[in-house]
Image (cartoon, rainbow, N blue to C red):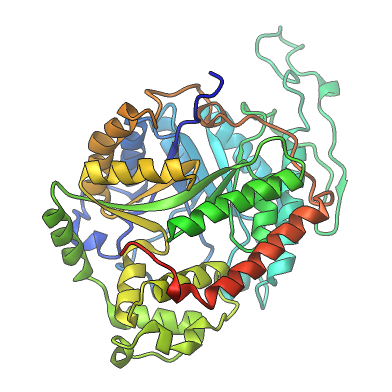
Length: 472
């Protein structure tokens, strides 16, 4: 209906036990026979509330310093394929790195999941972060930021061309034997770029969605240019509502300058912790905080920022630890900068900074009763903070059922959420049609310049971030 606001879309960020580092300490870790069974149960719960998708992150290395208790990683598309067989409507978004995967592998994997799930696949495009990942693939060093994003942009273009190498009716079981496949409706790609040379075509028919959903996360200028130019959905971590609103506007403006008829959906993460009363919320939060290993967190922070911090530093204000503002080039630089801005803005000590990041990992938190959390989400939506939210329950077995059973009905009554699924594919349920993406070689200089200018402004804003107001 013309003039009707778009509904707020919901994703579930899958993580074993929950997103607080202490989640595994308070949950029943033997409840599920496998990690895939755990994820499938979470996905079914989300599907019962008509979440549009589940999201599974990934990295290509073993870490000896996990946040919280150690949990093995499961390869996303293996897990999502199993979840596809146990669900029917919810979208399945998984992470694949363009730095350490060839476009043909990516296109084939996503097309297979899209066929298997009946059109519910999505690809979260990442460029990877760590030198340790490079060494797992025969490289000494991780490629630099600019190189990684140039490669990612070209990879997306190749993958889209591979999906498009089959016409929709090139193969059909509705036709008689001997006529089901029409060779003339399959064409080679013959892509030759700086990073990839791919002949094509793909060895699978066109995916049911035409193209699986393309998702991208990144707040740097190159990340904004990539997401605004080629993604259907942009994931982001925003710890401050005002910064989140600015980021969404920045993505939409860059998409306009890139010539896109419709901007990508902006979907920040939202950490939620629920209780029947404010006292219960405080009690749960304090109980989870008991399992924060401050020594381990300081060691990780030291590695991230090139520092040498000890527990004696915990009660020092972040503003006094000047070195923390020095980027190391490891990990996500824009995310590090956002974490520091939030700590300075809120006047955190190092202890508070560690606890805050252990709880929500730089994403906006909402803690309260179901009514309070729902009201917070509605207010964020009205302010233009997001087109959707990637929900991060503090403890999956507690906060996911509470969100599904108590928060979602309030959002529906407020007209923020649809009553059910609007289609059978992920694109239909998100209201995102397959459209022409801007080629990595044709992105306008204006769009990239706008992204870099906004980054420069962010850097300048960081110097006076401590003076900005924030709801504690």
